[in-house]
Length: 326
Image 1 (cartoon, rainbow, N blue to C red):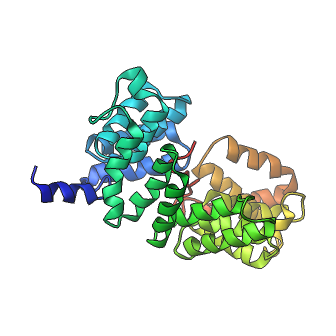
Image 2: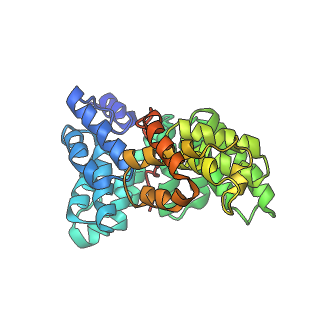
């Protein structure tokens, strides 16, 4: 392969190959379902995109199979391996976690160390300015037991505009008891990173910022950002909006609801109904069960009539799971 073409391929974003309309629509639906924790039903859609060559779909198919069975199944291993062969670093780290090389003889082509293979595949893209690749180096260098290098790349990723890295830096600051002596200092440091990502439209940062501001006592600002998180499709923001319309003064809700408008229980019930319709499951069922007795029969009837206003809004509801979570 000519050297210039090889360099061009190395700096292309993972999954950059174009999909046809059918495969693209399948991927979008598969990712919508995956992000809504409907992982089993996401699999057939993601398979269409993965078989069309989309590396991101390959990786998330591996995730869906792994999470569905709480371990590295044969299907998960095969999809991770396909993504890894196309340069996906997180697929390589998943193969390492599952001891794929030692137990299944699924090894990188240049040796037996998947984290080093991930570094080889990712570092050229990061050095070429790919902010997402810089963020991936944070995970890779942690696997290589180089935490200082990991943090340096995470900071570079955030400064290069990666919103996920900004949000992650906020979470690290929020939990950093070693460098911050009080909870207030941790939350104030975290809020600065959350704000940068939230102002750029990143829903998880909006949700985290609302929580941090609430703990800091900035209740009106917290409610404004929780509302924006809901509008951006974050399911936590949507559920808080519903709960604060029904039980704003109840223990566990009063802090975040202090900046909320006057409660409208029928509206809150309508939102919970719409969430359950869009993302059915034990979580939405529990929300309806827990709040049912706080809403009168008349308010529930009105909520049923209002439900359509809150159903299938754009963007769709999502838990915004981390790409490389647990």
